[in-house]
Length: 342
Image (cartoon, rainbow, N blue to C red; front, side):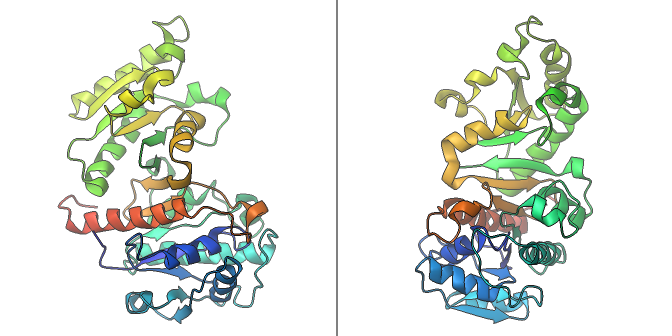
C-alpha cells in the first residue's frame, strides 16, 4: 500500500544519527519497498552524512513537495531551508544552530502534512534540551505535532509499535510516584477509545483487542497490593466493553508480554512509561516505531534518540527509521482508502 503523496521527513538534530539514517533509508528504498519521501532541510548535511557512512546517495533540492515522487528513484529529494543552509556536518557535536535547523525542519514537515501537501510526517530524533534553547516549549515532538494539528495534548496518544508488539503508555514522562494519581477512569476510557479507533482506521484491524495492564503487582491481588486496579482500572475496562470495544483487564503486567499472551491482543495499554517501553525495546529495539494516534495526520518516529556518541561512525542501525517510514506510508494509504472519517 502506498500513499498518493510523498512523506515529509524532519531531520532531527543534525549532529545526531537522524541525517545518516535518512540517507541510509533512501539507499535501501528498493530493498524495503519504501514509499517516496523527502527530507525537509539540510541538503549539504545529508550529502556529508551519507558520504561519512560510505553511501553513494545523490541529493537533489526540490522547491515543492509535489516534485519528490519524480525525483525519488534517482536521488534523495530535499526541500531545502534557508535555515542552516551552510551549517557544517558535525556529528556528535550538537550546537544552537543545529537545534534551530532541527526546529525549522520539524515545523515545516508538520505544516506540510497538516496542509495536505505531504502524505504523512516522520520526525527524526531530537535533543529536547537543545531545542529548548531556541524556543521549543513542548514536552516533546508528540505534543508539538498535536499542537500543529490543533489537537489537545491529552488526545494525542503515543503508541510504540514493532513486529512483535504494540504498547501505549497512558502516562509518559512523569515521576513514578505521580502515576497512581494520574491514572483515572476517564484517562483509560478516553485513550482506549482513541486507540481502538486508530487501530481500525490506520492498521485495518476491524475489531481491535485491547489488553489493559494492571497498575499494581498481580493486579493488586484483590486490594492487598493497592486498590487502584479494583476501583479504577477494572471499571474503566468494563465501560469500554459496554461501548463495544474489545477490552480486557486489568492484567498482571509480569505475565502480559509472554509469547502465548501476546497472541491474544493487538495492543497493550500500560499504566506508565517503563511498563510500555521495556517490553517493546526488549523485543523490537531495532524496529520499534513511535506512532502518534488521535491526529488528523499520520505521524511516526523511530523509537530511539539522537545517539550523539555514535553519530557519523556508521554504527547506528537503520531498522527503526526504515520501519517508521514504511509504517507511515502504510497508515497514510489505509486512511486514503478508509471510509472512516479523519
